[in-house]
Length: 70
Image 1: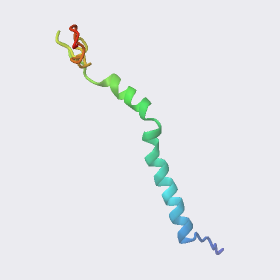
Image 2: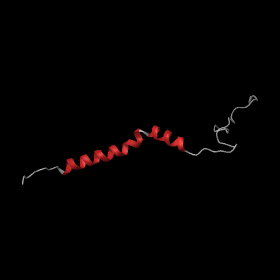
Image 3: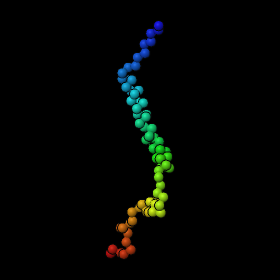
């Protein structure tokens, strides 16, 4: 029987575990645009005539007027 003296320092072990967790957590942030566009393709779109795409999502400019304020 051969003895193997493999030892990882507790500080080094926690550093490795922290690096692995940080890498796994950062993956969605790095690929967020690709993930968002992929899920956007599978989202259900409205089928009736009053779809949200025909309505304007920009607010109307209520500050502009045709009369001169002076």
